[in-house]
Image (tube, rainbow, N blue to C red; front, top):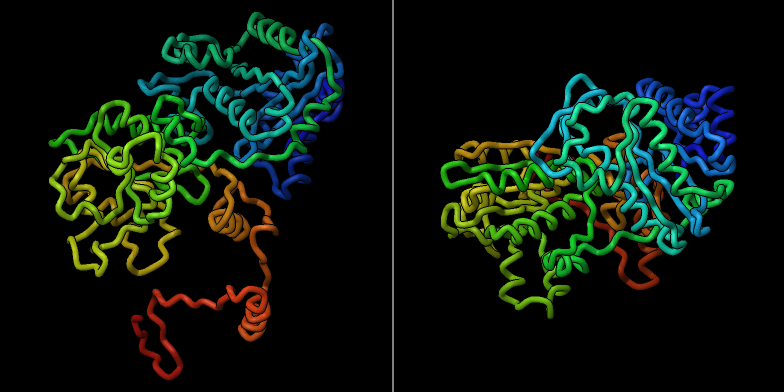
Amino acid sequence: MIIYQGTKTRFLHDTDNRDIEDVVSSAYLAATGKYVPHAEIRSWRESLGQMAKVLRDKDMPDDMGVGIEYGIPQTSKRIDFILSGRGSDNRPRLIVVELKQWSSSKLTDKDGIIIAHRGGAHEREGAHPCYQAWSYAALLEGFNEAVYDGDVTLKPCAYLHNYNDDGIISNQHYAAYIEKAPLFLRGDDERERLRDFIKSQVKHGDKAELLYKIENGRIRPSKMLSDSLAKMLKGNREFVLIDEQKVVYETALVLARAARVDKKLVAIIKGGPGTGKSVVAINLIVALTQLGLLTKYVSKNSAPRSVYKQRLTGSFTQVEISSLFSGSGAFTTTEPNIFDALIVDEAHRLNKHSGLYGNLGENQIKEIINSAKCTILFVDDDQIVTINDIGHSSELERWAIELGAQVTHLELASQFRCNGSDGYLAWLDNLLGIRETANEDFDPDAFDFRVIDSPTELHRQISKKNQANNKSRVVAGYCWDWPSKKSPTPLTL
């Protein structure tokens, strides 16, 4: 979805005569049914006004396409500003512009991460604007059929129109990403450089046709994580991390490298369905393995581990495959700190005891943290589903502190649109206002969702469906205490 799209001529007219921030705000409300915060409206007024100054150039085609606030496929992230047209070779071109109002920043020693005011009163870590622009372009190129089948050339850049170069935002530490997505700062010379960059890419206008194709292009499902793990382990990381994912990934790498026997470290990473927990976890396994650290991907659920092992068969020996993955109950007799790092997916599903009959071990949380110098725990407190699931974030922290570990809290907030049961949960969270997710609409092909007035009618509908293939059931959950009229005292089942 592109909130605003038109030509250069229309954009400049709306900027001059209609207050562009109000135009975009109205379009956003019409498209999403949500009002825009005043802070974002002020941001649009300033940044879009600066882009209007850039585009006031007679050598730029008047019918060049202008798009504002494009929702990146499979995520809840938006590209600030895009320009479309054709190059000198007549091939379609798309310029991705990341706009910032920053005036200062601070270096970090993490790859692609910089400290700055990103809304709110306090500075915080996040992706460098050039990294953002490059990663957004990469995601767009990977998910939108109109881009990858249309032979579209993408050129990302970042424009910080209030920032005087202080040697920090342009530091050599970020050179790799500034090379991928050029950086433009405050001043007339910088504005002219940005104009030259745009004119070097877009020679001819396209009347915003490419923007229309992109908005209506079929969205290709994200690549299966399991299909790419073998290539990733060979050095070809195929999943681009964006925003909080990048911060979590780089911070976890720092912790894993810093952890020692006498300095146990634990990271508790919260994230709901579709925030990319598994993508970050697998990227960490790949990176830590390449660093020569002894590590494992741990999950209670055997399904993802089985898929990954199956996909890797033929690329690695069974011993190598098994060494990368483990169930959560495999650490009851493990020596303390034997692993450099353990990456625990769905830590909220951890149980107290292990073994087929729940007769092994003392506590899975304790045993896992005890087994590694660094433990990275991905958790979603809202997905604890049975009384056997003990991995609430507060419980994870309690055990970490008891075992003498230093705890770091992180959060994955960027939502990816997901499918299957996670997609349904994400949609329900969004609908009920529990949290904003990328699943704003419901996929009618995935689920038959209805509101039924009575249990009797529900049972009748299920019975009707069951006549087709005998695979429909009415299921009740018995994981909590259930009182009844005859027995008002709660009974644990």
